[in-house]
Amino acid sequence: MGGNPALDFVDTIGGPLEDPHEDVHEFLRSYEDLVMFGLKTGTLSERSARRLRRLARERPGDAEAVVADARRKRALVEAAFRPVTEGSRPPAPVLEELRDFAAEASAHGELVAAGDGGFGWSWERSGELEAPLWPIAHAALELMLDGPLDRIKTCGRCRWLFLDTTKNHSRRWCSTEGCGTDVKKERYVARRRARRAGSSSG
Ligand SMILES: [Zn+2]
Image (cartoon, rainbow, N blue to C red; front, top):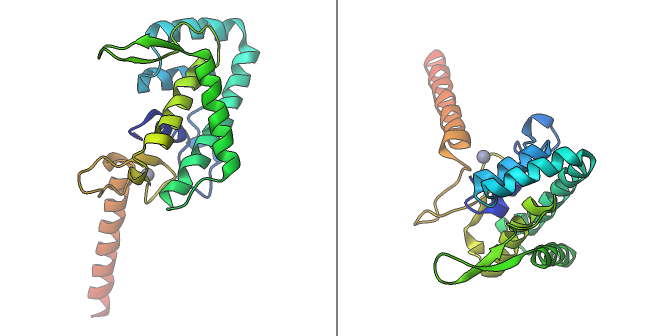
């Protein structure tokens, strides 16, 4: 949805910006949710997912702690990128925390040959419950350093962030199926109401 794993991760909480704690908008409730996020965004392989699930069953308390940490890291990534959507910069302490998060990821990662002849990061062999978080840390740092920062936007209707990849930078809603459709529906209803009001008074 967000077009980048770091922004997708921010979008694991939905709803309006002012009311972030309503449980219906929380998509990161369990360790399994974190694994599913990794699979859906392609940041976690099936093999890693199987291993992590087994590990989470063996150490449920630790897995729960990782979920709590994941929510804190999500708030950090959001604190790094939301100011960018408003034309300002994230505060220095947020950038320091982001650096630390990415440094932790690097320390646990491996440099491996990638399909294109180059090299990339891999956490494939990591046997730690935190593993789903590290590709996110790396994606966040890369996005902060390389951008395109001017393409990061917030939905005009909900709290989700996304990368606007349209040619003329015209994307305004997180998705046409979600907020985009809702806005169109609301406009339609408003237009009809206005027409009805107009006809009854005239
Ligand atoms: Zn939206």
